[in-house]
Each structure stands twice: as C-alpha cells, then as structure tokens.
Amino acid sequence: MCRMNTSENKPFTIFREDPLQLHMWWDNLGKNSKEIVVRVLGGLITLLNVKARTDVIEALIPFWDSTRNVFRFADFELTPTLEEVAGYAGMNGNLRSQYLLSPRPVLPHQFLDLLNISRTVQNNDLSKGCCALQFLYQCYGNPRGFDEPNLGLTHTGNRGKWEARRTLAFITAFLGIMVCPRDDKKIEIGLVGMVDVAMKRAESIIVPLILLEIYRALTVCKEGGSFFQGCNLLLQLWIQEHLCHRVGYMNFGLTGLNCIEKFEKRVTGVAFHEGIGDWFIRQRSLTADQIEWAFGWLPATEAICMSAKKCYVLLMGVHSIQPYAPHRVLRQLGRFQIIPHD
Image (cartoon, rainbow, N blue to C red):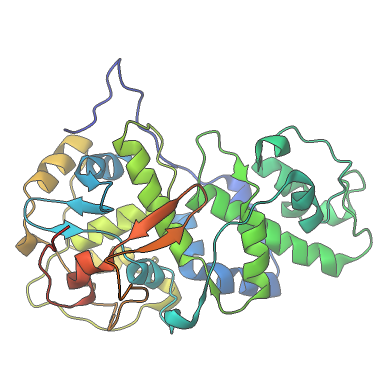
C-alpha cells in the first residue's frame, strides 16, 4: 500500500535543494577544471537545475520489488538501466570498454592526504566517515581559499596543485550531495577515493554507482526508511519520461551532454499528476501499452553489462552490492520482452 504521512510514520523526505555553495563553486571553477568535471560526471552536472518532486518518488516506492530490483506494475516490469542512466549523463559511447568505478575504503587520514590537507586538522565528522560541505568549501570552493593561511592546506604557494585538488573536492561534494545524499546532509568521505581514480583514468565511468544507489535507496524506503539516499532527481526524470507514451513516436537523435536540459522540451504537452495520491492511483492502473518502453533518443542496440551464465550480475555501490538483471527489461532496449521466470 502507499506510504502516507501519519503520526506513526515519519514524513518521507528526499534531497530537495542543492546548496547555494555548490552552485557558486561550479560557477567559480576555471575552464580546465570544468572540462575535467564534465569528463567524470558528463551531463549530470545539469541536475543542479532540476526541481525535486517528493510526490513522484514516494508514489513509486510501493511498486518496487526489492528481490528483483524492478518496479512491478499491473502487467509489466520496469527498472532504470545502465543504458538509460548513461544516456541521461550523455555517456553514449562504447561503455563496454569502460572501467566501472566503485567506492573505495578511505580512512580519515587518507581523505586528508588526497585533498592535501594536513593531518593535524581537527574535524569530528571524519571519524564517522563523513564531512560537511562547508569543510570542503572553505578549503576549495571559495576562490580565495588558496590565499587563506589557516586552512591547513599542505601545498602552500602551489596554485596548480590547489586547482587540481579543487576539482577533486568539487566532484566529491557533488556526488555526496546530488547522487548519494545523506539525511544529515554530510558527504561520504569514501567517495574521494573513487573520484581520484576517475580523474586519473580517462576510461572510467560512474554510471553503475548511480544506478546501484538508486536501487538501494528504493529498497531501504520500501522497508520503511523515510529518506531516499539515491539520486531522486534522475529517478523522477526517468519515470516521467517513460510515462510519455506517444503512438508511433521515434526519434533516434542523441541528446549528448544536454539530455537533462532538454527533458522539459521532450515532455512538452504531457500533463503530469500533482500529489502522491494522484501519482499512486495512476501507477496502480498502468498497463504495458500505456508507457514509452524505449527512449527515442537512446538508440541502445546491446546491453552494456549482462551475464551469459546467470540471469543477473552484481554491481557495487557505496553501501551495498546489488543484483542487476537486464534480461528482465530487454524491452527497454528495444527487444522483444516477456516477464521472465524467476
């Protein structure tokens, strides 16, 4: 049944508003730094301009099947796929040859070392495996941070190193806030190790991490959790676009890095519901002939990742390992599909 906010149930919350500091940080980055950010994050940086919808996410959760990692509607299954997440990020190249990134264990002193911050700096959050955005912003977000003598930075006088670490810190902050948010608004320090590898390996990709954090967040919320810890912004775009069914619609033009920016144009003329109740009722009555199965702008011809021996593969996220079973939703890749046997 649908979650409702009652005295016995904590209000359901999601990441709602990206901090002004993150916008200011992005605006103040130099041209070279922005190019590195886009290489790692692709078009995901445009999520900064997407308005969050709590009702869309909360109404989806009752339909989530956490044993199969799919949404189960009246007569069909649907799930976010690696191809779709990659498409939204504008990473439409040969993804099979990419290095799949996953978080790495990072101790507090390693976190400080990677960011060229002295180990003598005192921060109580680090021992808990997290840090505040303000901690990173005062060191690397503020364009005057390089000249601040009391931050504990260990590359005094070397602006090149400061700029490089500034980019590393920004991507870490973006992922910690926009992609893997915490209800206390802190940032997981383990992300910095993954971002460090992403910046050094040009062929790396973060798409599996994003997808797996969405899966985990849906499962946690289905089991009673009240905060969505995955990328709710991407999930709400995904479900809304699948509901934009147009008979005979085909448009196999790649959208690239501006896929998220062009979302509103792609859904022009489609009326979406307002409020969790209306969303829930609509989804409860959904049938397979009422949705857009394959995105017209995503000419997926083969699955990025699929096991030849088992019906699923395992992918790693920040907090868990999750099964991924693309064979259950081949219709989203433009192939013939029936609901497979378990």
